[in-house]
Each structure stands twice: as structure tokens, then as C-alpha cells.
Length: 270
Ligand SMILES: C[S@@+](CC[C@H](N)C(=O)[O-])C[C@H]1O[C@@H](n2cnc3c(N)ncnc32)[C@H](O)[C@@H]1O
Image 1: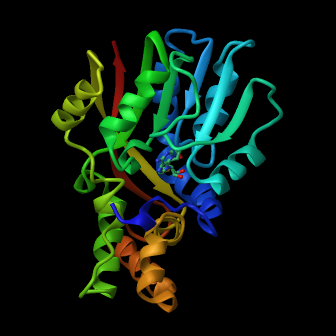
Image 2: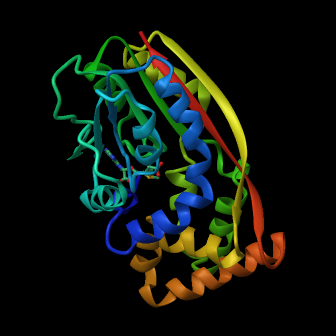
């Protein structure tokens, strides 16, 4: 993973929350929240919470006296999340690396993480850290994207942007968000971290946007793909976005567009 892959700062939080979240992240929130709430947890830790799409959905579903600690590596994402959340005394916001959690052993009933594990530089260490802070009987609920070929817009944007930089194509989307999809490997790494009961479900959904430009802007400007493009030539960010827009229009047409997305939803315990 490149260093810039984990930097969600500058203009990224706003584009991420306003364009990326409705495009692909909102679709999986209910699936995750349902699994988190299945045991009526009294305490929940969310890692890699980003701009707070899970937090906004999950908080109203938790018990009135539940403790909900919401964390992310990047303070700008957490600030964005907190600014969108209504006042809720149960929520504690805290900057934290999922691989080095500032919590005592056995502190939470559930640890949840939507589309964050792909960013962990060492997944076994990240899973072991989640397990360390879980109480006996606790559950780690998380999701990761399936391979890029199962996620239409991400694949099309990656190919279109590659054509702008043919000698050094930006590969963020394939390398990181869509680079950790092998379920056998996920099982094996969870086992190495100490989890004994592992359930993995693969879910396909449809991603929709008002226009091809919204999709292109979301991926090119609301994710660390932006960091990769700007590192090559900041003056080409708009051209890369335009080329991605054209590729999506060619494939999905003018006006509203829809494309397949697919992810793995995982519950690990024991
Ligand atoms: C694709 S976003 C997912 C955000 C959110 N969970 C959602 O569903 O919209 C990935 C998030 O992982 C965070 N992240 C990256 N590396 C991390 C780490 N080591 N520990 C905690 N969070 C991390 C990023 O800051 C970013 O907010």
C-alpha cells in the first residue's frame, strides 16, 4: 500500500461524504448495522469510521445506555463525521489507528468497521487488536470490497485514468479498496489473529448516481486516487475526471447511471 492511500484529508472528506458515500457506502450500512445490533450490545467500538455514514445509522438503533466510541486514523474525516451527527451523549469521538487502539483489553461487546480493513498495513495485527479489545463472547463485524471487476464504476474509472498516465497508471482503487477480496485469505488471517468462528457473506448491490460526472468526481476527487493523480500532475486532475466521466457515459449513458457493486460482510467471534 502506498503512503498516500491512507490519507483522507484536504478536499477529500467533503467529496467523499457528499459523493462517494451515497454512491457506494450507504448501500451496505443496513447490512452492517443489523449484524452489530443482533446481540443488543452495551458497548460498540467503530474503527475507520470515515465521514460517519455508519455512525449516523447505527447510533439510533443502539440501546439508550449504550457506549459508542467512534474512531478513525484521519482526524479530518472524524471532524466531518462529528459535524454531521446530532448531539448524542453516548458517542465518544476519538482519533485512533485500528492497529494500535487506545483502549483496555476486553472493553467492548462489538467492534465494527465498514470498508476500513483494506487500509490496514498488517491485517492480522489489526484483527488481533480488534479481538484484544473485545469482551469474551464479543464480535468483530466488518466489510471489505470484492475484486474490482465486480465493481463496475471503480473498474471503469481506473481504466480511464490509466489512459491519462499510461507510463505510470494510478492504481489506488485496484490496489487498496479492491485489493483485499480473497475470502480464503480473510478467513486465514482472522484465524491467525485468534478468531475461531468466522462467517462471510458476499452481497451484490446496485450503485446509482445522478450523472456519470458525479461518479467520476466521487472516485477521482473524493478518494486517495486524488492524491495519486495530483502527485503525478495536479494540473491533470480535471482532465482525469473528464476522461472518467466520458468512459462512464459511453458505458452507462447520459443522465442517471447505475452499476454493480459487490462486497464481503464478515462476522468473527471466538
Ligand atoms: C473507505 S473509508 C471508509 C469509511 C467509513 N467506514 C465508510 O463506510 O464510509 C476508509 C477509512 O479508513 C480510515 N483508515 C485508514 N487507515 C486506517 C487505520 N490504520 N486505522 C483506522 N482508520 C484507518 C481512513 O481514514 C478512512 O476514513
